Length: 539
Image (cartoon, rainbow, N blue to C red; front, side):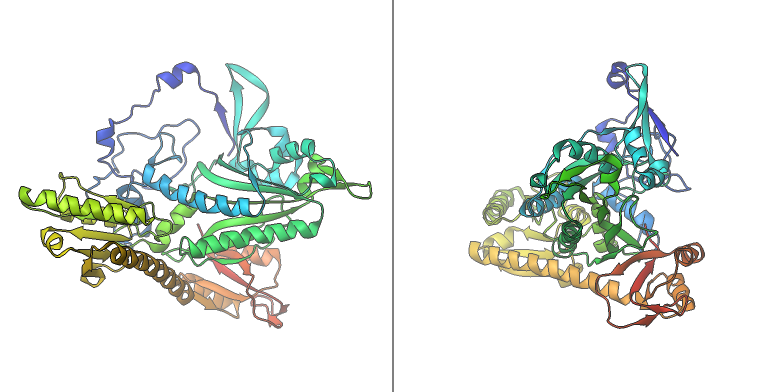
C-alpha cells in the first residue's frame, strides 16, 4: 500500500489532537497494547489509542519464553524499558536504555567504517518520486512500502515526494554531480539516518514503519573493486555480530529471488533467534552498474573513455537490538553481552539500620570509582525507595551482566558478593571477592570476558543443534515443520524456490560462504549442485 502524508501545520504541531498519558502514568504501563490480530500498521495518520485495554502493569510477571515467544519478547521490551509504542501504529519510541544499545552498535561500526576509508555524511529524507522510477526493479520492489508526501504548505506538490525508504536513488543523483574522473574514485560514504517503509504487520525493533539504520554507499572504477567492497562490509558485520553481540550469524549470498531490488548480488548475515526463526541481521549489495546506468553516473577513465561507475550499498539497523533480545534473553528478561551492554556492572548496597547506611554507601561509592577508573561501565543503585530484592529483579530484567552486592558484613570484611546474569541463582553467585582495587578490577574484567564467551558458546550450540542436513524435499519439509533450519544441496529453479516458500513457509536464507567441496545432488531436482543452501522461516 502507498500512503500519502500531509506535512503538518504549525497548529497541529503545537496542539496535537492525540491525548497522551502523564509521564508518571505512562511509566506504569507495559508495551503490550497490540490488537489480538497482531501488531498491524494502521492507515496513515491513524493514532494508536492511548487507553488500549491490552496494556499491562509493569510489575506483572514476564510471559515465559516457552509459552508464548512473541508475548515474552514484547514483555521484555516493556519491562526492560527499551521502547514504547508511538501514537501512529507501526511506530515506536526508543527509550534511553534501548537507544544506548543502538549507540554501542554505532560506536563500534563508526570506527570500522572510518578505518576502511568511509566518511559520514547526510542526505535529505525527501526524495522525488521520479528518482524511484528510474530504476525499474527498484521501484517494483519498493512501491508497496512507500510513504508519499503530496501536500506541503497547504498546496498540492508539483511532484510527489517519497519519504526515504533507502537512499540509492538520491545518492546516485548526487554522485553524478561529484564524480567526473577516475581521480574522484573510489567515493565511499555512510549515513546514519531514519527510513520509512509502510509495513502492514509490525514488531518493535524487528519491523516498524520507521526505523534507524546506517547505510553505506560506494562508487568504484571496476567491478572487482565493487565486489571486494561488498564482501569486506559483510565481513565487518559478521565480525561485529560474533565479537560484540555474541550472535553466531551465518554469512552468505542471497538467492536471486531474495536479492535486493536493483542489486546484482546481495550478501547477508542470518541469525537464529530463540524461537528458531531466522533474522536477516545485515546486508551488503553489489549494485553493479544498475543505478549508475539509470542515473548516468559516469567517470572518465585513464584512457579518456566515459564509463559507468560500479557501486555497492550496505546496511544494518535497529533490528539488531531485537536480535540481541531474541538470541540471549530468558524468562527473567534481557541478557546483554558485556561488550554491548550500556551498564556492565550494577552495584546494589544493602542495609537495614540507619547506622549501617553511611558505611555501606561509602564502600559502594569507592567500588564504583575503582571500576569506572578501570573503564568498566558501572551503575550504583543507591535509591532507598525500593528493596534490594526489587533491585535485583529490576537489573536482571535489564540484562546487566554483573551485579555486585555490598552489605554491612561485606564492609567489615572488605569484600563483595558478585553475581552473574547468565548463570541464575546461587550457581552464579560468588562470595568474598576482595575490594582491593587491583584484585576487584581483574576479577570483574575476567568475569565480563567469561560472560561474553559463554553467551556466544551457548548461542552457537543452540544454532548448530537446530540445523538439519537434508538431501530430499521430504526431509526439508520435515525439518521445517519441526521448527528447525534445513541445509541441503540446491541448484533448482526460481519456481522451485517459490514452491518451497508456498508449501513450507520457508525461504532460502543464504548460500553460506562456508561450503563443502565437491559436486552434490540437488535435493529438489536430483541434478548436480555445487552449493548447499539454508532454508528457514524468518522474520
